[in-house]
Length: 470
Image (cartoon, rainbow, N blue to C red; front, side, top):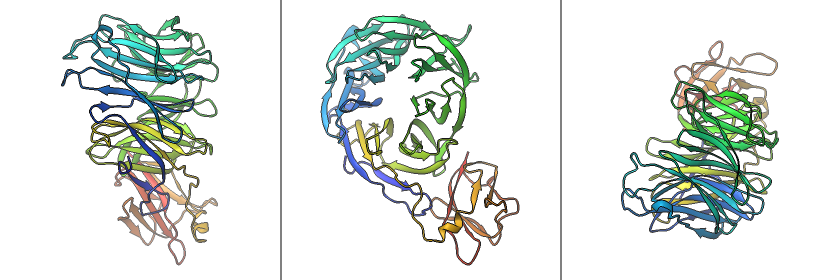
């Protein structure tokens, strides 16, 4: 994968893009078939891709199957497995969730369709599988229904078992399985008396209970966060913003980071503390994952549609407000980069996993992973003139479209001297001998990243970074 990704790094305060540092890159898959990644998880001894492989059942009539690949911490491929499941002539199988226990054994939740040709109107079934650390099947459980059944997300518990969310026709449930595959309890959670709803995702809380994201059957009704105890009983529920909840992760304080297009920070009791919509070069970032780094900032991973395909986006943000501190964009023309995992190694470097939709380095769709050197500094080193700039700050920043941005010093006086505003490509957008009275209006500025320079004395100071949101 040496020439697979082209990296464009937007360094805070710099006009010119700079190339970040890859420590290693790795692609997994085959030349003959397509492989995807739906989960890239940390396991003892390395990292695990859980995805799909094989042919397209509707096009070539070849069955697809799980495709598993384990990497070492240094990026070496330790093993690759493609287990198949012939139950009821499974032809189309979608892995939906994965989790590992302390011994390295892991669980995969999935949904499969048994028909050879069309998916229209065909029933689906759920499949839950437990594997050894080397990818051999220990046991599997099949969830049968009349119309639509599936196992969705999973979390491993301290006793070696697993808690899953799933659907069996109209039954939306949370269930606990023992390490040997016995169902220990099963709780049904419908949205309300008239809506079935869907259970999208869950995370294990420090209390031993769970936070579950629930969505309704249609738009216009808010999602919910359900807080459950260790036995799956409901403790409380809180309203949530409507969107698909891709991944839920904990920070060091036990709060939940919800990657749902926007990034949401949620308390362990389900209260939304703040949310942020991010953008790069004027296009929205679909935030999928977030983790806390050793410095106490959040690393956010997502996807950004560039007009042709999806690029991979990484942003380092402040934990109390979500404000962007630093970001980078990975661009490859000719296919989508879909992020499915985000981790930190022992040195605080950034490990990213995912899949490319087509034109991969091995042929067709492939799994990928790379280790990117962590950003040890939030601000570049500047000449002594930068010290003068530290006396000024922009607020609000990021600014919602239509807000007026003020530039002031901690003592209170607003800046009123010469200024120039440039976009992320360095093109001059606005300038003047005096900043407008009351601040800089953003009504006519397209969403994106801007750099504001000021000249309070004889020389221009280094640029301040301004982000304008939609």
